[in-house]
Image 1 (cartoon, one colour):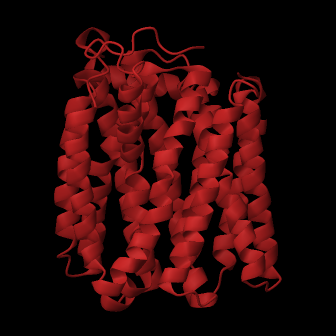
Image 2: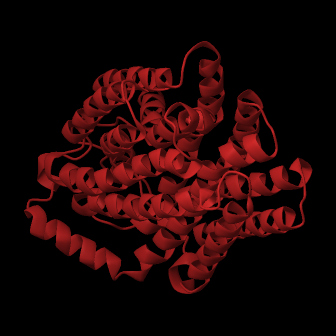
Length: 412
């Protein structure tokens, strides 16, 4: 499989000129970072949110889950819309709505209002994530797509590294609602960057014209296609394990292991750097090693980290035992994300790429949103629920991949 012969009718040769390719990488990488920007910058503030809004750890974590639910639902809408209307219009509308919703979060008077606004914020931000994947598939397929997704992780990977660090530093000079003001500004910046740097990649002649019925038919067909559900479900389960870590680690590392918000943000950033490094390794190996084997290696890494974390927590181990395990859970995602995505979207015609990308994202964020609150189900004073959930999900992800050997284990 190679790069698509005609990258876009609107901008001929856009991905062949080095300057245009660089602009594409920066813009798409930033758009795929909408989820970590919306979630990770806010992580160091979670204990303060719980205290300021007079609520518990699980309710505070629901503000993360609400954003993830929005991210899931929004992708289910934005993806098919981009198949019918083209990529630019739904993307620009989503970014504008994200900036407004983020600003409204600043004034949330209670946790219930904040949860509702986070759903809206996530749904709006979802347009950037799902449409960025569809744009890549408009332009690339197979190994070329896997390499491009890995390249995007250079940009995308900066978000989980920098976001909690920025969030921790912002908390030094402003109360936690100020984080949402910064997110609103980021939404405006992405809107302007998209206007300036991203052309239309799905011309009218390649769009889906069948409406809702065609979208539902596409969803049913994809759900019954093992070449899609194999890597897609493995990716979703691994993402749910990752989100459990994201949701639970602020309380576990700060309340149980007594890291400051700034030290927590550094630890979180180191783990995110592992994702970036693994993603770049994946891009270098793509074409040399089968994509299914790279996916399997990532799943094995996450499963090993999950089991080590569970053993460390049950044995009463300290940070020297817990942090390396979390590093494995996080860094394995760098091998899983680009290869599972490329495998799941391979050979899909352009008119259904947005819907396929939407279903892929919906499964990830729906499972992540369901798993996240489990990390705090026993309160903020024990890490056992987080460790158990991560271990179980990572093992299930590996099992799903093993049960789909034809495409997931052998595809190039």
